[in-house]
Length: 229
Image (tube, rainbow, N blue to C red; front, side, top):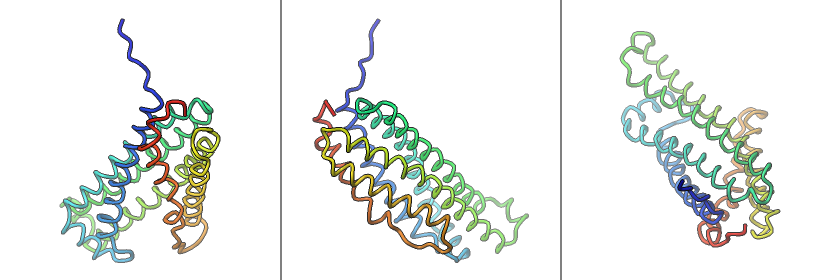
């Protein structure tokens, strides 16, 4: 029988790097060029009008987020293969946290699909008046944000374990591990800040994510050359 050879750690590193690069581009587009350009906080009428006027763009943003969720699973798998020689159990747990995050993101995306249903389904007009309909739209958008925020907790835990494994690897500079743990702290602070503080408006993660970018570039440039990670 022909046997399919196991994927090498250097190939897994390259797959993870490419996946992270694609995710970065798609997530930036979906968040900053689609959602933030169409959604106006506290203004259900303007938000709904923007989505109706740019329905195709909104659908494209949702599609990009769905691809990001899929790539998260691929990256989780690739990082597990790359890091399991360091600690198989912790590497598996690290992957599980990222996969759980991807699943939660998928559930959150369903709320955005509900926005499309509300604004494009004539049936809803027989149940809600216009103001009620637009309020339902904002409720779905807020539900998306709340569910995604729960996912950020699992993503932060993933980054913490990833940083620990990178720090302990011996063949990856320890600074990458430290920066990943710092990025983890930023996400966790933001997530729990939303849960614990009314009108929390800090974005610590916007300043601590640099470790993720640097590690991504390491995977793309040097990771694929290091078979013994």
